[in-house]
Length: 262
Image (cartoon, rainbow, N blue to C red; front, side, top):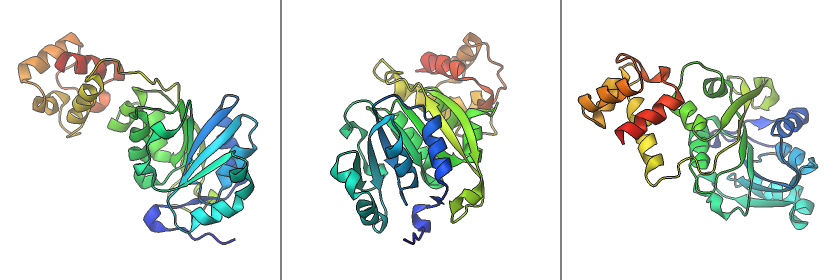
């Protein structure tokens, strides 16, 4: 069966079953896992998930109007026996709270909505226990390996532990993207990281303000949320250099700043 990738959906189909099997392996799923898959596409990763002895059932959401019915036909047996539930829709309109119990997100996601999907599920009321994502290599490195922080890397680290698992060359996809990919795992996701009302909102408002202008000093950026005098006090309390830039501040220090300035 021929699969035609749609640029509008950012589709790059994974063509190697061995890579799909390795993705499932590095996800380190517990026995009886429920897996939520975004954009199953040709079903390569779906097939590997259903073959895993650790997976009890898979919930897959596909936005493509052509692929969804093809997947229904391909996996008719698995849908009938309840091991696969296929949803035809846009993941950006999906409510994770409709998934019963603990679940693990595993997906080959379009580059252009990577950050949006990661943030949406990490900040959801019903968070996944883990996320294993095939993403652009540069994004995986920025989140899990870079010594410089970013808005996205900190948004990930405040909820879980990112790990760069392995690189996937561009030739493993059809059509081949212009860059290599990598598998990024986010483990030990804390479902109750922000326990106090308003704590999460305060943290992210400080974080967004801090990264609003990357070339400016952090202290200057934060003046939109607090007076200069209070920022100076916060920096002194956190033992921060007044000229430090946002990418050089650790997660722990960001949390202290948010508590001080909230």
